[in-house]
Image (cartoon, rainbow, N blue to C red; front, side, top):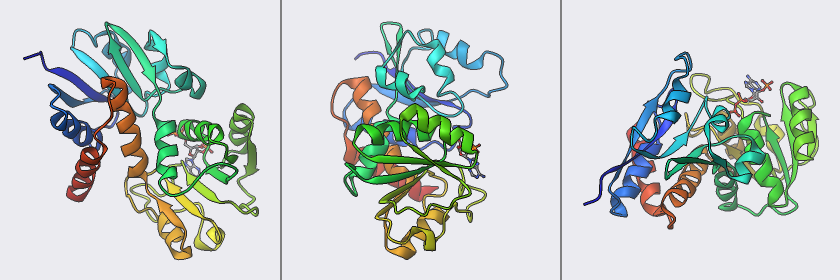
Length: 274
Ligand code: ATR
């Protein structure tokens, strides 16, 4: 039998990550001799992330998921960067191929696939709330799939900067959107634990919106999602994007179709138990 391969998620904190449940279930179902582990590297640890990357071979690591706060930093320690990840400026997946580290970004496609479960994107007017790394990845994907994107952010300068980069519109945070949007996506941490009762928009501002999506996974049903439910909008909660991006990671690592049903079941079982 071949030597057991190691995969894992690197970030801080990673204790509550839902990724091990999904990937370990996939390995089992596909009879892959591998284990997916947690690698918690505190950002205060000097060169912690850099050393970890240099030692991937020593640690027998075949692939990594990258999460906060290392998605941008990871670009510096790779031998090759997939063009999409380079364009987005962040990496959430690393493949160790014969000691060469190759970086990818599956967040963008993961978000698009989560939206496509509920609606189409071409010519849809989409409001992206936030202008950080997640907004950049999602905004890039939305544009690729023909949506008309507007960025809305607390710090308007950052909204303008990202909008210019993606060649889309920006909206002043103080102007609660007056335009009509088909899809609204929250990429900010507003509404995440422990401030779970906060929401950037309320039901009255969501009237007529077709789909409201939140990428937060703690909690799954954020206040924004609760507000959206009051209007009858379709909702997309954060674990859908998490599942889709994990499936794409599996496909990068193993060059075969991900067992999505198995990963989905493991994800919801884990969510049910936390
Ligand atoms: P990520 O890389 O995960 O997207 P980030 O780069 O920290 O995270 O971006 C967080 C985004 O959420 C930013 O756009 C931030 O707005 P600012 O640019 O004004 O900082 C936004 N954000 C964070 N906390 C917020 C809050 N309390 N209200 C509104 N927006 C907030």
